[in-house]
Length: 263
Ligand SMILES: [Zn+2]
Image (cartoon, rainbow, N blue to C red; front, side, top):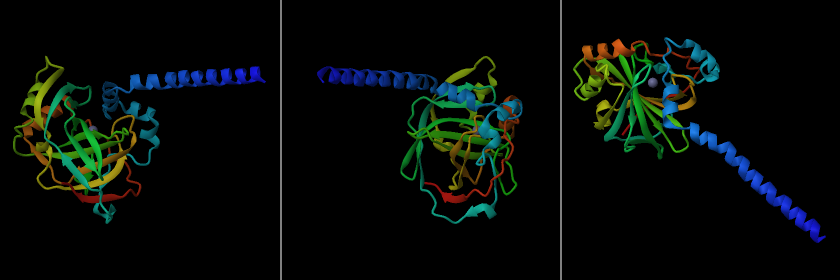
């Protein structure tokens, strides 16, 4: 009896250590590949040049909740709107010329938005030209995407339309970097994200996807109704380097769009 007990005990402990070893083996590579850089490069693939990349990703082809979409008043439902609050101010940024867009990545992790008491930290912003989303058939000169992530890794993207008008002072430094062909990356000390948010706080909320591969669904979209302005020359400069990096409209498939007012 005693020997049998000993054998049982030994079997139990070797099972425990094997489980620990294998679970370690399984989680380690995930932690290694889950870094910020990889997510960014994978996200930024132009529709225009790399349509095949979209075809290779299952969600891009077969997903039923894809973005961007056409926002039509007929699809806007009266429903309890989620409460959305912006906690925006200065952020230290790393500017990067990606292959298909200009991206600014958070270095200080100070800014966030709150959706129904859940915090989504600001991660990065980038631009599309022309806009990806449309409201009542109207497209805009550009669309800015501010990407946020919560602790579970779920995404919330804030979209701001840009139309041709007054020159935008705050973007001047970023555009100087864009123009300088000797630079690929640059640090930006204190950029105030709040300046991107239109004065009129009406927005649309719906659930969609990333607009670039891997087209992951479950993304909460907040799209401001009113645009901010860049000058014609500022828009032309972006277009010179990254023009036509917008994904075409995807079917809404009866998805609910909720009109909201953010704080
Ligand atoms: Zn985008």
